[in-house]
Amino acid sequence: MYAKAAYLNNSLDDTADLSEPLVVKSCGNYRLLSRKSFVTYRPSGRRDFQLLYIASGKAHFFFNNEEKLLPAGTMVLYRPDEEQNYTYYLEDKPEVFWVHFTGFDAENILAALNLKSNIFFTGVSTDFNLLFQRIISEIQSSESGSCKITPLILQNILCLIERYALSSVSKANTTKKEIELAIQFFSENYSRDIDIKEYAASRHISLCWFIRSFKKYTGLSPMQYILSMRITNAKYLLENTQYNVSEISSIVGYENSLYFSRIFKKNTGFSPTEYRKKFCL
Figure 1 (spheres, rainbow, N blue to C red):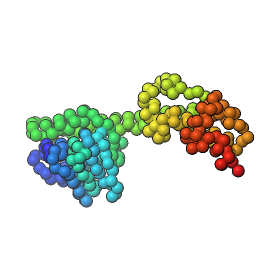
Figure 2: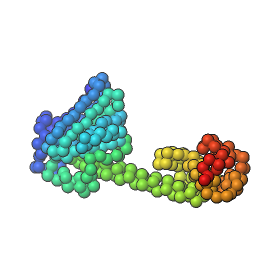
Figure 3: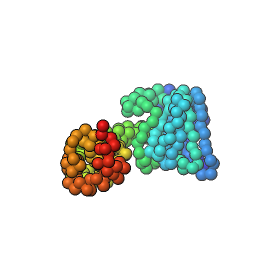
Figure 4: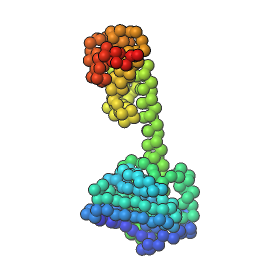
């Protein structure tokens, strides 16, 4: 296992230091090279705070006996006396940075940045790697003023967590809203000839992004979703109306009734006529 770490005053003590607003006690970097796993289990936690950053790979964390597989770009924050239970596996190729800190104003600083939970998805950024490495170097150097510089670097990291985490939530909300608008549009216009490329352009969004995001949220591509709506409505019309197959074909968006019949049978296993005979009372 590759490990690079630095400890303030070469001390492994985890006691709370309330002499300053924010005190960085240690910082390090782990990478598994040959060891199959690395387990950390502290049932009573530590007396200081710990922040971990999964820079690459993934790691297994447990909260309230529930396992969470966290990907690269995730931050995990433990508060004093909070159970710590996590495992790194060689097959997951994890690289993790960590920092322990304390101080009489530590909790207020976290609260001011709205860092109230355990897990924050920030995305992968070399900014974090460089900042953690800078803390390690400052502690190792023991130069004059390093004890004042390391809390400032840590606050930089915490501010970036707030920025990136909020940005991630905002992007997720924007994506959800965009997909909901598309679903509404398709529901109202499924019988028309919808050009997905033109729709994406009308919304000023990337075609690839739209197709990928739509499938992520619905499990179907936009065209598969439209097809599903057409087949569902065709089934309803066959079961509940006296329209003939040609009329139903036109209603759900197919001018060619033979083509509609082929599509319908491919998706249901029955031709429209067979479906009506089988499912109409």
